[in-house]
Length: 348
Image 1 (tube, rainbow, N blue to C red):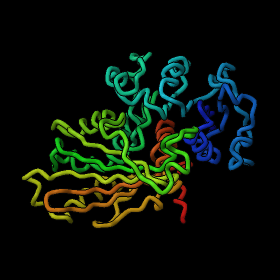
Image 2: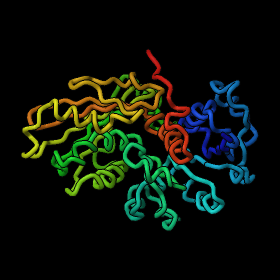
Image 3: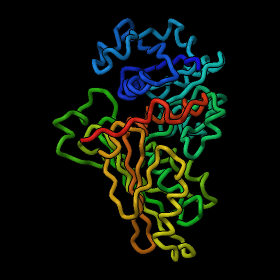
C-alpha cells in the first residue's frame, strides 16, 4: 500500500508533538511537512529531542506551498487558523483534520459567541464532519473535512451515549464533573499553569460557562428526542496528562426497574466492537494512569438509587486530541482503525 503524505500545521505545541510521535511509526504514512512561521528551518528534533532518530524533518514556512503536496493536513493550531487555511487545501483535494474548534460547531452564531471570533467560512463548515468515530464512523469514512472533538466532550458523549440513545435517563438533568491535567491548557507561558502555581493545588474553572458545553450539548441532542440540559464543571488538577469525568444521570421512571446487570450489559454491548473503549466491570474505579499515553478510554458504571454514575478516563492529549485525530485519519483512508495508535498505556 502506498503511503500517504502528512502535513501538520502547528507542530510546536503539545498536540502537534503528540501527532508527530504517533505518526512517526505509522505503517501507512510519510511525514512530509510540519509548518511554523517562527521556527522555519529549525530541525524538529532540535525542539523535541524525544523525536531524535524518528523525525528528520525541519519546520517549513507555510507560505512555501509544501502543504499542497500532502494528502491530509492536520491543524494543531489556535482557533481561527484552520478556517483561514482549510478552504484552499480542500479545493485542491487535500483532506483536513482540525484539532481546534473551527469546525466542531455547526451554528456559527454559537461559535462566535463562545470563541469571540467571526467564522470566515460558513459554507465550508456545512461539509464538516464531527470526528468522534465511535458515534459517527460512516460519516467520518466519507469526510473531506473533520472537526476533531474536544477532550472533555469526548468523555461526556461516550459516557452518556448508551443512556440517552436508549431513552433511559432525564436529558434535562445531566451533570458532568470533569478534571484535566495541566497539558490541556496548551504549551505556553502562563502564570496559572506554572509549576509553583498549579502544583499541590486544584481548582474549578469555567463554572459560569465553558466553551465545550455548547459543543457537547449539540452532539448529545442528536442522541435523544428530549431537550438536553447539561451542567458541566471542569477542574484543573496537578498532573501533566490525564482526564477524569464523573457523569451523573437520573433514570426515567420507566427505567428505574432496570438492574445493575442490565445497565452493565447495555454499555458492554454498545461498545463491544470498539477497540478504544473499555467498559470495566460494574463498580470499578478507572484511573487516569491506566490510559496514559494511549488512545484508550475506560469507563465504569455505578448507581445510587435512580442515579447512574459513569466514571470515564482518558489521556487528554491522545484520545482527547491527537490520537483521536489519527483514528479519524485511519477511518477516512480505509486503514485499520488501530494503525499507529494501538500502543499500551504507560505505567507507572
